[in-house]
Every structure is written in structure tokens, then in C-alpha cells.
Length: 566
Image (cartoon, rainbow, N blue to C red; front, side, top):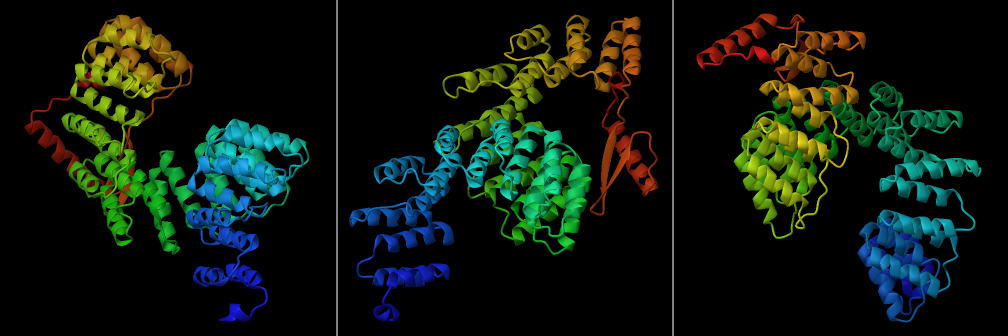
């Protein structure tokens, strides 16, 4: 054996780590008769950074302590990396105490890794305390703290720290830019995001796929798809993360057709879609009812062993539900080997969306009885309350709302929950109770809540509450043409012709135009979009024949159009 004749086995161990051969490095370590702290540090470093075996890195630390070796400034940074990835906050805090005990708490490298550990474990206040105690901060310190803020949702604090960093004379690098762009996207701060891009150009920083993806994400989250696409098209190298960013951006901004087209382009380039790609494409399919493409994605996911992935399976459930194929949604759910809260929420919402309220409530009860493996969250209650709305289950809705706010769950109702309750009460004719509910809300009602109530007032011709809702709604959402149209109808139904005419005049004076209806038809796995009043250029005769057939079928079923809704 080479180690028996090599004068410095510890040095040889270090070279084995560099070769990334875990088996050989482990064998070398076991053959060292008296391993030193150096040997243990090398193994801990390799396990934490090369092989990502974080649990074993911690085990080597315990072995080191048991044989009486003292950890030093080369031990702790890699242990903090292990804690960061294991989310082992309690152990990380004990190591923090160890840095003080062993006198390495002033080492900058130890401080940086400690700061990162607290950030990744969600203890951002402790991370900031460590940051403030660093006497000689370098760019790594600033990046660690800014990145920590961005990752845990403290976007505003991250941008404040970035400004302070610039004021103190530090120039950002790629890591800084990526973290700041994430913060801008989370805040929807498009103007600051543009300034960051200008800074990148000014400093002649290389536009890597990592930075380019961050820019695409930022612009997409801020709703500027033109800029996102410009950055995307300008990237020389596009990895799967970059493709995911632009496809998801289109899907989340209501431009599903563009997202689907890009997915087809991505496949032509030879890029291999992953679970995030498929989730984004399925979201786009769900938005426009592209069932055939959604089925193809399921087949593709099965071929790539991704169908049971939590993200893909949940997206499949959502897609099938929104395309009206609830049996397929249920099949995907029951086939999932592991279900999380998102999976349950997807199917509960699917049942609610398709009017199968009893199944939604039954599934909620089944979820609640899962012995702690999963637990309903705020989104679950939105789904099950929506089911109550569709079925008109007023008493059940009240019970569930009270359950949500009880000590059993202790959730603070959000605007979506209030919207469901107002909609539920309004549809059942309890308009006064619905209005009282709005008035008791802890925050100002938004257009979702008021829109639901206004629709009910229009249906029941209640001018008293309708008038109150109209005034609030036009203050909150003055550019929505639907508000003016429904308001005019409410006044017209009560023969208040002057007030009805005023709504149209007000709409014209404010420059608000009525948005035309838009639909999609899928033919041969291709989607064709058309607007109300527009001509159908593609296979128009065949499409009109289908429409005529549907009209005749509806007449035979006894359907009579409700012209009051026009």
C-alpha cells in the first residue's frame, strides 16, 4: 500500500480529496494510524464541499472531539456549510458557542460561514448580528448578508444593504447582482432592477447565464416580458434554468401561448426539460385549456421518471382540473407515492373548480385526519371555502371559516378567505350580512371582494348595497371596464336611467375601453386565439360548423340564454 511508504500521509489525503475519490480518500484515512486535526479537517472539508455528505461531515467532527483533538479555524467553516444544508440550526448555534470556546470567533472566514449558516436556516436577525460584529468586512460579507435577506423574503432590507455597500465603496460582483435582482423581482421594483442592469453594462460585467437568468426572472416578476425576452435572446449560453425562467415568466403573466411556443423551441435546441420546465408548461396549458399538450407532457414526464415529482404531479392535477378532466386529476393524485400540502390543495381546488363540492369537503376532512403528515394551510381553506361557494353551502362555509380562525389552526383570514365568504353569502341572498362582513374586515376590501358582491347585487337587483359597493369599487379600480358595465346594469334594472347613463359617460371620460372577450381553440395540438367580433382566418367554416352544432345541442337540452348577463 502506498501510504505505508509515504512520509506524509496527511498530505496524500489532501490530494485524494482534490481527486474527488471518496472511496480512496476514506481508505487512506482509515490507514492513518494517528490522524491529526489536519486529517480530520481535510475529510470534513471534502465531505462538506466535494461530496456533499453533510451528515458524515458532522460525524467526523464528533469523532474528532471524542479522541481529544481540538477544532480550529479550518474546522468550523465547513461544519457551518454542513449545518446550512442540513438546516441544523440547533447544532449550528452550539458550534457558534464552540468558536468562542476555542478562540476562533474573530476569524473572518469563520464569521462569513457562520453568517451564511444563520441566513440559510432562516435566522436572519442572528445573521445580521454576526454581520454587524465583523470589523473588517469584505465583499463576501456583504454578499452573504444581502443574499440572506433576499432568500428569506426581506427584499427591502437587502436593497438597503446594497445601497450602503455601494456608499462604502464596494463594487458588486455577479453574486451581488443576482441577489439584488431577486430582491427587485420580489418587490416588483422595475426601476431599481433597470438601474442594476445599467450598472452591469457600465462595469462591463460578463453576462453569464447565471446573471442573465436573474435578469429574466426579475423582468418577468415585474411584468416586463419584452425586456425579459430581450435579455433571454441576447444570452449566448442558455441552460435549463434560463429556459425555465422565461417559460414560467410567460405562463405567470397570462401569455401562455408564448410560453408553450418557447417550450417547443427549447426542445428543438436539444435542452433537456426538467421538473420546473414541465410545471411551467403545464401551468400554461391549464390557463388556456390545452388538454392535448398537457397529456403529452404527462407522457413525457413518465418517460423521464418525473411524473411522481411533487411539482410535476401537482401541476398535472391543476392542468387536468382546469381542462375539465377531473378523473385524470384524481388518478394522478392517488398514484402519487408522496403527497405534500400542495398536492392536496391542488385536488381540493380541482373538485371545487368543477362543482364537486362534496368531494372537496370530503378530501379536506381526509387531509385533516392524516395524523400530522400533512396539515391544511391558508390555501387549503381557500379551496374548501370555494367549494362551499359553488354549492351554496352557507352553514358549512361559516363552520369552516370559524374553524380556520379557531385555536385548532389559528390562521388570520386573508383577502381570499373574505372574498369567498362574501361571495358565498351574496350568492345565497344574504347581501346585508355580506356587506356587514366587508365592513368588519381588518383591512380595506379589494376589487375581488367588492366585485363578487357587486355581481350579486346586479343579480338580485339590490340598488341599496350595490350603490355602496359601486362607490368603493370605482375608487379602488377606476380602469376596469367591467365595473362600469355592471354598475350601469344595476341602475338600469332599477330604472335609474340617468345614473345608468352616467356610468357610460364616466367610463368614456376616463378613457376606459371595454376589453373584448377572448377564446382559444386547440386544433391538431396547436392553439388558435380569437377575439369577440374578429373574423376567424384559420379553418373558419369548420369552426362555425362546430359552433352551430353546439347551439343546436344546447337548444335540445332546453337552454335559454340569459340576456341580462350580456
